[in-house]
Length: 189
Image 1 (cartoon, rainbow, N blue to C red):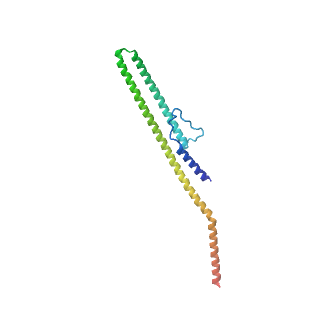
Image 2: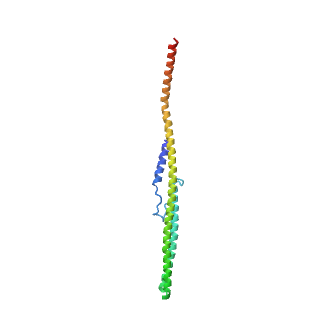
Image 3: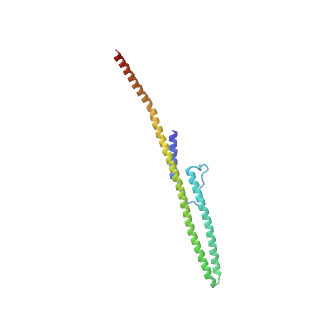
């Protein structure tokens, strides 16, 4: 019964592991907390930890990016205010500065988007690799358990057949003994 319970437990764990979503990026603003009673050494716990760390990294990067973009926007707004009050001869120079700052802001946004995508893909690859490793370990354990179960079933079958084999050997021995006695009596007279 213990073997069967272990196999069912491993199968249930395997089903849970295969049904765990890789990573939820929809909630990067508030990472999902890990349940307090979750075992941090099991597959789901490790995946949850990886997801939380990745979400925290993404959130920190997004916060820094938002601050940098806000500072750049403020600088552009200050230049626009300066442009509105500037004499005609300085407006061209200020407009050039505004355009440069706007280009920097756009390139910064593009770089940040690319970096966020790269970070997400990198973390997804790590999580998928961990899940694959754990799945292969689970498969190896399942194979060992199946092999052990087959050996135990074979041994159990031998033990179940033992009384029949014992009875057959006793019958064979009895027949042989009767035959020997019969031969002895017939041959000796």
